[in-house]
Length: 168
Image (cartoon, rainbow, N blue to C red; front, top):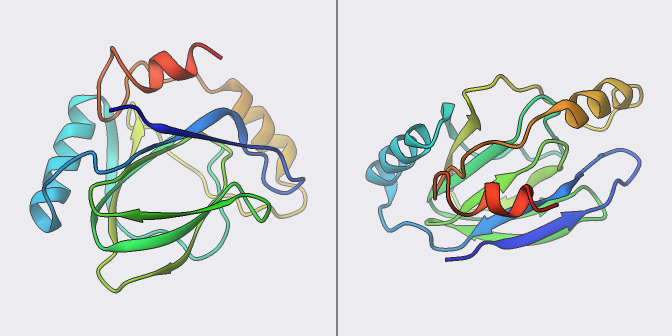
């Protein structure tokens, strides 16, 4: 299973990243509580920790201190990725989205059952930026200093993220 790759340009507010956002469609079969547990265990096995369960904010935001993975274990949502000039995609239970630091993401709409597990490489801490004036110099510096994770949260060391991101 190869991920779909999406790349977004800096729009002046949201920096985005030269690294592509990766979308694995229908990457796992378990749903609801079993799906959430499976995602937490799989992510942790591949050293993506500091996990949480919830949804996706309904406003544009990005993280400058960490990359992020979202695993959808319940429901369906329409997400806007890459800021106002970005792309809309539908995600549903079974999908995994790997978001490089700096890439904007926002929930446009969802059904009432939409839930995700989020996690970060090496259990890193994360910040929340919204494109406000003045946040870019520090955010840009943070993003440019982040290493590429050694593992893909789904596939581990050999495939996916390390192979794709390190080739850029």
